[in-house]
Structures are given as structure tokens and as C-alpha cells.
Amino acid sequence: MKIPRRGSLGAALVTSVAVSALLLAGCSSTSSSNDSAGSGSTSAADGAWSYKDATGATIKVDHTPKRVVVLNDIALSFIEYGLQPVGTFGQLTMAKDARFTGLDTDGVTQLGEAYGDIDLEQLAALKPDLVVTSVYPTDEKGTLDTTQPGYGFKDMEQQKQIQAIAPVVQVKWGGKGEDVIEKIADLAESLGAKESTVDKAEKRFDTAADELEKVAKDTDLSVVSMYADGDGAYVTRPTDEPSLQMYSSFGVDFVNPKPKGFYWGIYSWENAGQITGDVILLSQQGYQVADLEKQPTFADNAALQAGQVHSWTFPALDYASQADYMQKMAGWLEDSKKLS
Image 1 (cartoon, rainbow, N blue to C red):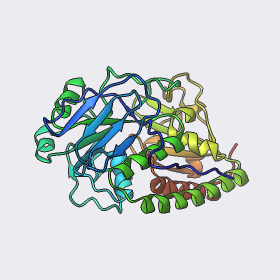
Image 2: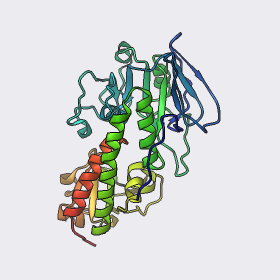
Image 3: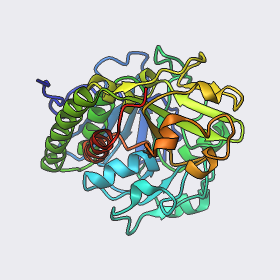
């Protein structure tokens, strides 16, 4: 039996890292505090909007932001909730990111072709009210390094240039997956997403979570999430990835990498034969199945040989995206066999 996941819109929104925004005169302002407790967003009767982030900085805009530029990971969630960003950026373009397949991206401008590649002139031309990105913790304790740029920004200089165009908020991408999903949903609602749309997605999420939990218990399979390239294989530590942490809480048995390290356990190709698991979730970036089959130390991997390899798309942290991925995962587990 699962407990309700969402409170009211006024509930705490511990979702972003502090920014020192260089805001457009007369459009917005920023105040800071070291206290992150009780952080949240508000839209006053006069239309003013504010957002208090995880480290205590409060972003204020004199109207609810409508023209929003968003990191692709979060843009997906906004679109699922009925919000249409005016622009997006990130590691992959929308055209190359499988997660955007089937979504309505009309009117969304792609601001770059790769990580850190953001066309500032094009960004300014969009006249955004707000830019939304994420920030990853630097350790298992959830520490945020505010001396480093937000995710998707090339460096602090670029971040300052972006902040001169529009206020920037950074969503904390760590900890419990369900917490992050809830915070993003509340942020989306503060920007105009309909509560009914979010609630409908949450019901799908609940159904998918229940199904995944049942299948995980019935099949008793081990799952490994990984990325690979010419330097080696990177196995995700499930406690450090919000989605995997959540699936683990639903009973999916994820393989913990042996090499120490935050987020990733890194195996050289000489040691990649140590990676085991009944099912592989392989990142949509980097090496794919044909590439893995060419690696002498990995070609005989049991899951690889059995064809029990599926795409790890890093599903967006919203109820709809996660419901879709959990339904797929439940199907994959049902169709897989125990190998070890």
C-alpha cells in the first residue's frame, strides 16, 4: 500500500540550487537566505511569482513566467504536464533524444547541439521570463557545489551571461525519485500546469508502480544500468540515481557496482567481465549492443547473449514519463529469464 505522494501546491519545494541572478530591470528580483526549509513557489493575486530554491535563494518575477526555456530533462516533464517551453538545451537535441518521440514540440526552439552549446543571441531573441535547469549533488549526502555551473551550462561565465538575460532556477536532481517528481510537478503547477493534468498522470504512475512492484517480486531478476564508451563501462549506483532509487523501492533488484565512487562504478574494459545481471538497461548515449558485442571481455556477458538488453533513456522525473518507462520495464522483466 503506497501513501499519497503529493500535498498542496503550497507544500515545500526543495528543488533548486541558489543563483545570483542578474535580472532584467523592472521584471524580476532576487533575495537570498541560507535557510532552505519551507522553500516553495507562490503566485500572488496581483500575478507576482516567486520561487525559493534548495539553498534559500528566492527568485521573484512580477508575473507568472510564461516564456520559459528549460533543460531537456525538465522540458519533457513540462510538456507532459501541458506546458510548452519556448526553448530547450541539453546533452542531446530533441531530434536525437528518444524521449521526445511522440511529444508535441511545435514552437520549442533548440538552442544548441550538445552539452554547453547554448546560442545566447537566440536565447535573448526568445525573450524568456525564466530559465530552468538542474543541479546534481556531488556526493551521496546530497551536497550541492554552488561554485559550479548548473547542468547544461558550459561554465560559470556562460551561466552569468544567461542570468543577464533571464532569471535561472536549478532543480536538485538527486535523492529520492518520488520527491523529485513531486517537486517538479509542483513547480510546473506554479507555472500554469493544470492540477487535473498532473493528477491524471499520477494515477497512471500509481498503476504502473504497482505493476512493476508485482512483476519485480514474481520474477526475482537482477538489473544493471550502465553506460559504455571507448574508455570502459560505467555502472550506475542505484542509490545515487533518483529513478533507480525509486524502482529499487518498488522491489527491482539493481546491481551495485563493485568499484567505489559516487553515481558511477567505473570498470575498465579489462575488468568489464565482472559486470553481472539478468537484464541490462543500456544508456541511449554511448556504446550500443553492436559495440558491446565487439568487446572481447564483455561479448560473453549472459544478459547480452540472451538479448536481455533494453534502452535506459533516463526517463524524465514526472509522473507520465515514469509511468511509461515503468510499464516498459515491467514488460521486459516478464519476458526475461533468470541467468544467474
